[in-house]
Amino acid sequence: NNYESVHYLFTMRSFANGWNSNLGSNNVYYNKITEYIGTGTQNSGKNVYYYKYNNANEKSTANHSYGTASFFISNYKNWGNGLLFKKETFKKANGVEFEKVQSITNSHEWINLKTFNNFYAAPSIDFSPVLAGPNQTEMWKLPSLFKYANYKITTGEFHQTQVREVEYFGNDSLITLTDYEYNNPNHYYPTKTIKSLSTGKKYITSLAYVDESSAVVPYTDMKTANVLSPIIEKKEYTSTASNMEATFCGPPLKSTKTSYAFWNNNNLQIYPSTV
Image (tube, rainbow, N blue to C red; front, side, top):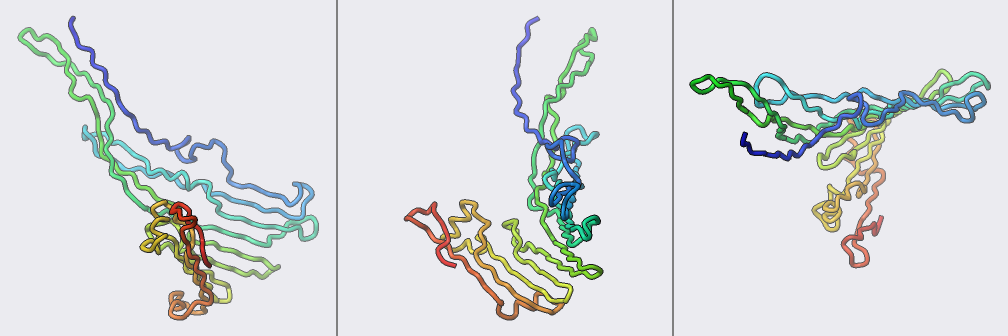
């Protein structure tokens, strides 16, 4: 009856995928919200908001120790749920009926930014009987203390790719499309916006942030401190050409540059100095 007591201490890392697997940690959510300018019965108009909840988690099969079953690890995308899909604005045309005056529709896409390769291990105590010895005494063996798996987690972000704005004037309408481009993989901010009117005219804006100037002080310090969002340079162009890039051959209509500097002889105080 002599035996040795062995205690195993395991560190567990868990990945939460929210209740119902798709809606994050909130158990109350809205697909549609109506905002009245006044009350529900007495008002001069209303705004209606529509939200998206269709960003389901993706799962990838992982290799593991037993070779038969499969482990699944979710790529967590629930923060993309609840994105504003559309906003519609109405006014009271005759005091009774609602007339739509504006509609704004947002489009988003998922961008894979980085993949983490990981190793998964979990306790798996499995006793199985065997016959051993000349008298066929039944004994127990412990083939494995752990089951393990290799898996990867892909992280990213939902980028806004386009805004479609429609202004209604009776039977006529004016459509404005704003497209967003993200050409710097080091940050999540749009580097160019293209606003296209129904007339064919385009307004193009190029945006440069801290990372684009990070080789120069004090922007090197700002990047080290993870201060990435300030816009350092903004250039605005206009064009009627179908090729939006053609506008960059000429000078911009307007250019704004914000310079940052150290203040009070303190490299932690970096603020705008000139615009």
